[in-house]
Image 1 (cartoon, rainbow, N blue to C red):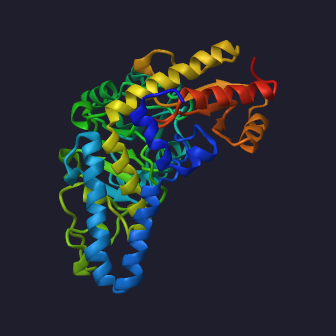
Image 2: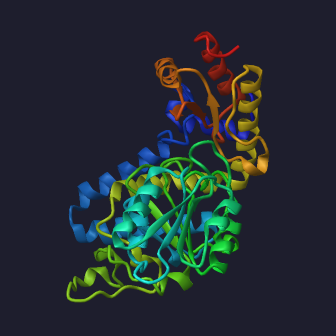
Length: 381
């Protein structure tokens, strides 16, 4: 099997990789043995300790803090500036609830190419006096051209879920700050596969989740808020875990910390936290720089094979503009996807294109198997 021996050695960690042609880490990470062990560790604590006091203080809260710390390491932040949320959707909702749209700054600059969570979460703010200003493209210059003196928020994805194209988040954040607006970056399709340092990017907030490239599961969102920004925002969507001392059980007043933790909500999903911490530990162990190097080689090979098969590629070809997935157009994409899944080839489809995502444990042989299956189906040469 072709590929670096040290990375291919990880294949045994993911049982699905041995049973299928797994090229779908951009949509749902393969379950790992480490993740299963972490869930079983939580189940054992829950079963044997029984006491909520013991399980929460001895097991769950330490694992929450470990996950936040690992997430901070991943994005170059201080752990105090990262908090857990039930999902990216709720993280955006809590953040958006803290923004005042009653004055002259009412505009939210947003691309039509965003994932629905981002679009719907910000569109909902129009009920609070905001107005979405749509951007047709997704380049930094497109956002800058739409950002005027009435802009309150510029919201953008660093890596597109549609085709893996990378947007210059650093430039977007700088342009937003010059205009007096907040910058909110969605990095669900970048974190864990395209290195980032939020201090250098300079964004006010960044959201991402663990169940794609970070090898975790759902029901966990991660929110970074720049400390200078967090201290001035007062969310109206909040919960008891957002309080400075949430086990004080004082519901008579709001006592937010001056950090990102003020955007936490209710009781976290403990099992998902254990699973996601286990997955993220693998990513940090392998190293995002190494993952990026291998990802570029493999996605480049997908493009090469697609070209040979005379299929149209929607994803940028330049390394510095390409994230971790490749979108390949095929006729009757949904029907082709179903046929591939029946054959044990794990990818997905969005808007008429197959999305192919090799991760660090994949081999060029997996990509060859995909294109052989496409040829067998009469789709590729």
